[in-house]
Length: 152
Image 1 (spheres, one colour):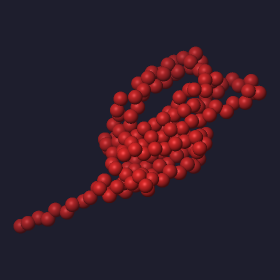
Image 2 (cartoon, one colour; image 1 turned 90 degrees about the horizontal axis):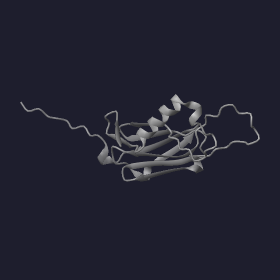
Image 3 (cartoon, one colour; image 1 turned 180 degrees about the vertical axis):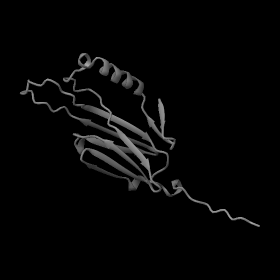
Image 4 (cartoon, one colour; image 1 turned 60 degrees about the vertical axis):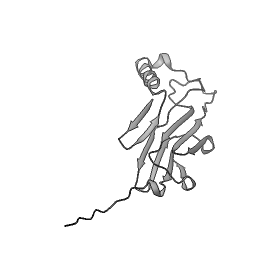
């Protein structure tokens, strides 16, 4: 399934978004029935924020608790892919937990960029659980204003 966001030409590919929404609704309706805090292969989806400036595209992903060595970012033409894993770190000594709602496991997000970018100038920074990727636009992708002359 392809989803277009905010009419900006940005396309986010999420093939299982319908199943995730259904699982979220089932979790909401039957919260204790579906919980399985021992499942280390659970998949989670970090939130994304993508915005476009005149000179660059900025992608931010909320990935708290993920070590930078467990994150990979790839850019192939105009497709940005962020992959990673948040490991389940649970001390078995503590058996008196009443509730554990942490998300963990692997994640994979793919963003179709609306413009070509300078691949050799892409920068990524990770601070306070937020991954920020700055993708400078290629010169041909920048908006150019053309002045119109009026003849009388």
